[in-house]
Structures are given as C-alpha cells and as structure tokens.
Image (cartoon, rainbow, N blue to C red):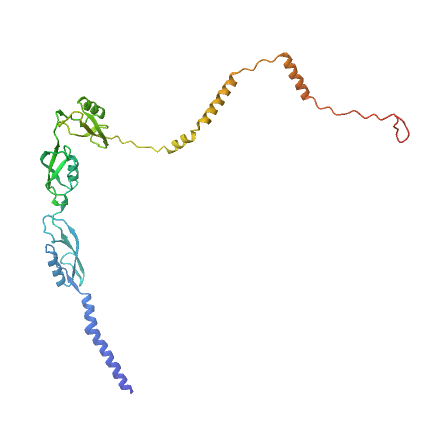
Length: 323
C-alpha cells in the first residue's frame, strides 16, 4: 500500500472521531450538566406534582406522610428542594404528602370498669360518655355492658365514646355500705355490722389513696344486696423494698444442727457446769505425806550400780600378788 493511501485512511478515521465527539458525546455531556429550575408543586395532588416535575426533567419521590386536618389526603404539603431553586437535570425532588386528619383506634371497653375505660380512652385523646345504665346479672355494677362505637373503629381526636353501664342485680333488702376511702380494718367491721361477709381482698397500688385504704369495691356502695352478701375489696397496697437475705439464710442453715448433736452439746455443757460447781475435798495428813514421798521418789535420780566386783581370794595379779 502506498504512502498516500495510508495517509488518506488515517485522515478519514480522525474526521470520523471528531464528528462522533461533536454530534454525540458533547450533547450528552452538556445535557447532563444542565441546570433546571425546580417548579413549586406544594398544594397539588401527588400525581399532578410528579407530572410537573417530570416535564421539568426532574424526578418526584413521595416522602413521609404528615397528618393535617385542613388538607385532603394526598395533597403535597412540602417539597425538597424547594420551588424556584436551580438544580441539575434529573435531580430527585422529595414530596411530603398529607394523610388528612389523624384517626385513633377505639379500644374494647366491654367488661371494663368506668374508671379503667376513662383511662384507656384518655391515652388515645378520646372521652367516655355514659348513655344509659341497666341491670345485669353477667356484669358487676359500674362495668361497661356495651359501647356505641365498636372496638377497632377509627375516630377523630376528642370523640366521645358512648357506653352503657351495668348497675348489677339490685335484688335484696340490705343497702351496701360505701367503703371507698376507708381503712381496710374499718371497712371489714362495717361489712360485718351490716350482716354481710368479707369477700376477696385484692391489693393494688394507687397513689391517690392512703396506704391500706379501699380504692374500689364490689358490689358498689348504695346498691341493694342480700344478707351474707360477699363484698370484694380493692385495697391500696403498701410497696416495700425487699432486701435479699440469702447470706443470712445460709448462715442460719449452717448453724442448724441435728437434734442428737444438740443433746450431746447440752449434756457436755451441763457436765462442765457441774464440775465447775464442785469444790475439791481437803486431803488428809496421811494422804499428804504419801503424796510428798511419791514426789521425792520421783525427784531422786536413779541409783547406778556402783558396787565393784570383789575378786576371789584365790585370784592373783600377774606378778603373783594376792588380794
């Protein structure tokens, strides 16, 4: 291949690369770095807001739901970045949507006392409304028989939940005394004085009453009952801190001994006391002398056998001398 042909091929390739860069790569690069103005979509529905952002070459993303009683459900309450701000093309815009007015679940109140039901509703910013009272053999006096708004339904803040309260079975000719606020012992005496019997005593803490004071009763006070009717009491319990006494219990267990050992120990102590109480009898003179002699003999050293052997007369020394 000649030199000119090679030169033409190289020139053509370079021109092609330049055209590709100018017509394809440069537009893409310029478009990616393009700045666009964020449209304000606050007050629009979530669908309309996403459409406006898409037309502006931006992406709308739904964020948290906020409760607002004045705005319909699905209305955009806020956005980030805010409107009229310049951002890069394709930027994500987060939208905060209204969930409407916040609703609260209605708890099940049937079988609960009026006081307990009021507390359960107050935790949900709801209120109790007593619509009626009826006799009931199933539910004690002061207990919820039924409720208008069913359990699990959604209601607005501050809604009053209508209930029907039981008055118990008003059968009998004795009026139940009012015992709430009285001391437990005093309440027991009043029950017996009214020819009734003491039922179950349930202890439960209640800071609104004194210690050992009656906080509730069943049947309720001023209702009718029969003779020997059992009166159940709910008493404010005194809370005491229990200190663990494991070490003391272990020590006490270690100190416990079998009965046989205790008897032996008592006998030994008695024998020691008897021995201490006895005085030694004075010794006689003869006994004293004997003891002295024994002591002298024990003190004297043992006598060695110092006697020399006496040789026989017939024996002589080596030199012939006789003894």
